[in-house]
Length: 157
Image 1 (cartoon, helix red, strand yellow):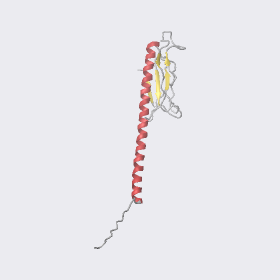
Image 2: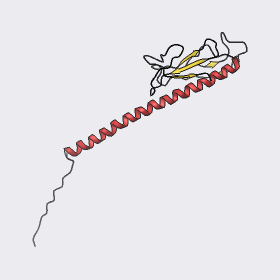
Image 3: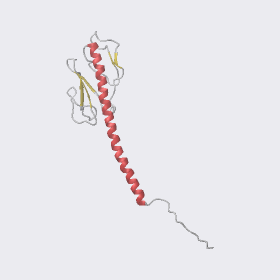
Image 4: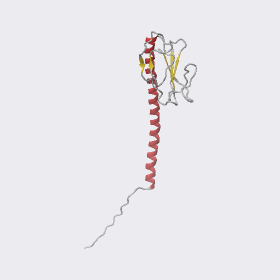
């Protein structure tokens, strides 16, 4: 009988080329996903801005229904209530029309702007959307934050 000794060579690990290909593919996929995530975040913030302005519009319309005029100013982050200086006596004193007026999602870099018209029967709400170009003047101005131009406007119906 012969004793045959077989030697089997086992190679473990990957070559440098294989590692570079895998790392390159991962880097490309990661780069593409970061761009799409950023676009989705901007779109989400823009949707929230539109929804916020519609909520504020609803509160302003309720205020006008009670007071026959729109408020002279509103404090973003504060509340919108009836009564106050310069408000007609018919206004619902003690009514809260909005307990917390929303701020822009990127506050303080971006702001919402409220401007009541001279006749107190019109108003403008402005914001700066991230995925929209153009300008919207609000009360003769168009600045919605530090170096940010307003490009979305909501007015009374």
